[in-house]
Image 1 (spheres, helix red, strand yellow):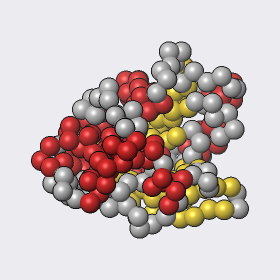
Image 2 (tube, rainbow, N blue to C red):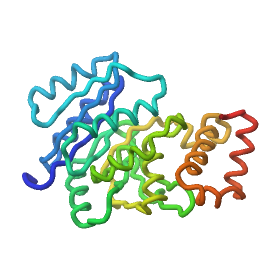
Image 3 (cartoon, rainbow, N blue to C red):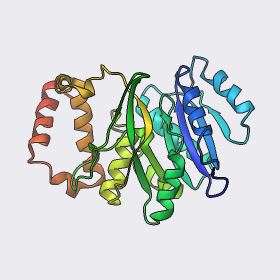
Length: 271
């Protein structure tokens, strides 16, 4: 059990996840690495999320901090970005782990993250691998779907698999916080920035994060190609790439992927 070492901050963003948020917080408190703090950012929930986490906080006053946001926007992706930025302002850890409130960690995850950063002094970001979690009886370990791409956004794990050196994240998040691209969430923005601008894409080849997913999610099926939102998000992804690195964007303009995206953009009249 680790009682020494750098402090690690776990940033949990929550909105109406009363059924799951307790498990997320408890999975952090049960880590075998003990120098942690939890920043629980509630984005104006109307359920009993705050009541549930407040009960946990009573017995863990030095480890759990609750932030309640009362001015919530209508765009979920911008809310997530805002939550992480505000949580970064109050957290004190040297390293930062991101955790969605409906996901949870394996008990040795944070120790693995700390060891990685200690052994890799020049690395500012690292991913671990997810365990796709549909229900208690259906779990799937994902191991080989994630990789770096030279002129395009990387294939990256879910948000709850992201960890950072805090100083680097604070500098980088300000460079991706455009008031455009409402379909692009924090994970896409930050991983693309680190991969293309910092040339960093680091994987711990272990499944350390339980990622809760709806088995009917169209992202896992061929139906996504018939979905307007999917094409809209892809179009915005190319526009984001153009914004942060025009040279790398320009290497895509004659590819089948980009031309197909433009075609569907015209059909759906996506902006």
